[in-house]
Length: 212
Image (tube, rainbow, N blue to C red):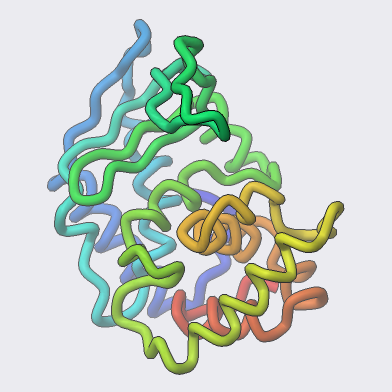
């Protein structure tokens, strides 16, 4: 169990354990690139992912069918054109991908890094995309409350050359901003609260517990 899940209040710890069990029963894991997926690896991914769904009304990623694990970063073909409208033949190296309503792909080496306290949490990032409805914030929230804060913080990140907390990758788009903010909430809660208190407050309310 991750340090964060071990520090949950008793009621949330029990809910977390229940949702981890549901996750493990309902999702299929596949090893890629020669990786053999163990029960311990499945459980560690499930424990990190289920920290995102501890609200009483949250479902256990109902549309997700499978989790693919690679030993480390993996290569994927490029599909997006560059500024000239050309698509490169060179594949991109990724540590994670999320296909909403289908599958999540993860680098196991980076899952382990997140468990060890690295500021990059590939599980939080990719599973946050499974919560996203494509407007830069998750399903089930009040857009009137979320939109002003998320837009303000997103624009702030786009202007900041060396942000102290949020990964600059979040400036790629509103959906990536939400995923990056989720990573920071779980991995750098105290720093996020210090530098982005309104954003931290929204995420604390949504995820249902303190990480600062």
